Image (tube, rainbow, N blue to C red; front, side):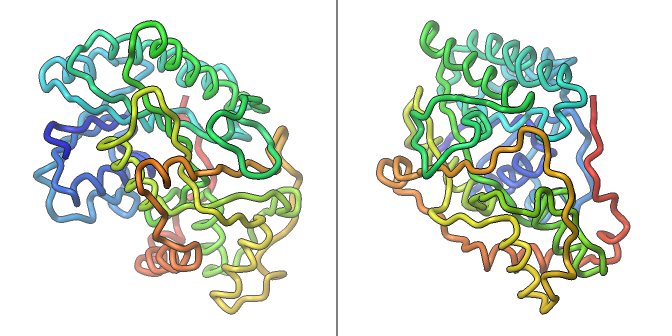
Length: 331
């Protein structure tokens, strides 16, 4: 069992805040660090738990003041660090690729180099992305070669390789995780599932890039958090773990599923838009390794997960209908 505090980088983002919520539920003392101040409570799953005594937040921009984070490490000596922080968004990475390289390569290197100096650190969980593999055919295993096709994917692949270098040469205790497309309550409204639901409820059409023909596997963040908890407790340093369900769906089919749930004609939900440059048509992760070795399996079906997101949006539709649903880039 986990007996020391967990440090979570990127705790104000969807993945990080959802994992913090899971830690609080498990009764684990958790410290969150993020470059952004915490968003509204509707987008912060850990705030939905009334027991806040187990969580402490500190604002840290890994591009500017990692020294604050390292000072906290020296003081509290965490055995576990989970890193969700990254410059994300695939399509937008073409516009300012240098920002993605700075955060996901340069600052990540500084983070890893600094953490490697702490002998009390037992596991550094590096939350990466299947984008590093590029477009693939069929279900791929953790040993699949990198073939990134966007600036975002290149930056993440480079950050992964830096962590691997420090593991191989300095015994840095990294464990890599790559999850399928995450979703759930609290996710930013520019992501496909909450955006489709919100637009359907407010009579708007979503832009369906390339007609929605690309295939993805979607996994509820609750299942990702439970997988990471398994990895923290039983995962082996140096390993990579895929976190994914065994089913995939095209984006077009996904939109239709949401339409069926809301009893709205599929044709009324979308308009076809130009496909994104360099977009991967397929990347499907074989997660048999974590299932076999750690006994993890997903518990939230896509249908029930979408219903949960629907309930979340309906619970405060007046608030959500006023939110900008476009990605806003932060340098």
